[in-house]
Length: 214
Image 1 (cartoon, one colour):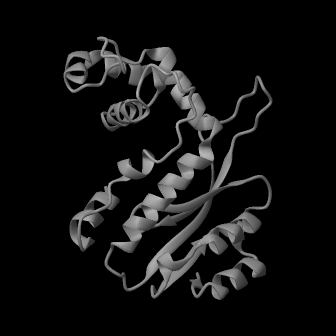
Image 2: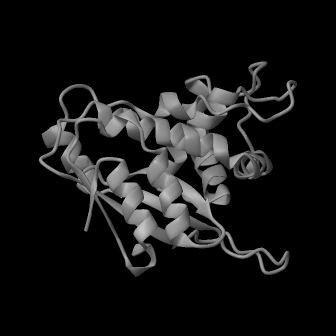
């Protein structure tokens, strides 16, 4: 809601759509696949936009909207009256997970584009925080939950950057801050974080980048 309100009151022009950036994610499938990559991706995005948050519910949404989707051309490459089944949707998400770096790069590029088209705030607050990714732990395989260090822009309500953290959060926080580039040039910004980020080396990194800490 915060992001939507910001879009309504602070944008200078047209807000960049994330779809174009997401469709830049490389097609990881074999070349002889049944469904067009962009069609598959957009259909999944539409299902998620309708509140379907699991592969099973996405597949069910596609089935529920079968007639409308087929009328819009969301079918097999050869025109058969068929939509991606549950197994296809699961493989889609498994493939995205295996190549998660491409998805993260696309989302980060979109977030930076949103920032670059926004009006300059009096002061931009960047919150560093570490979070466990829900559902990423797999006890059967001995996999621990994935920890992400995110740089969250409070004014926009979105994450500008994030990185996987396998150890010290402050060290990974420095890596996130160092990745910031021209998108914050000329912006009065500061960095906040909890006790995990209260290290001198991180504060020095923030100051080197031209921000302040709080």
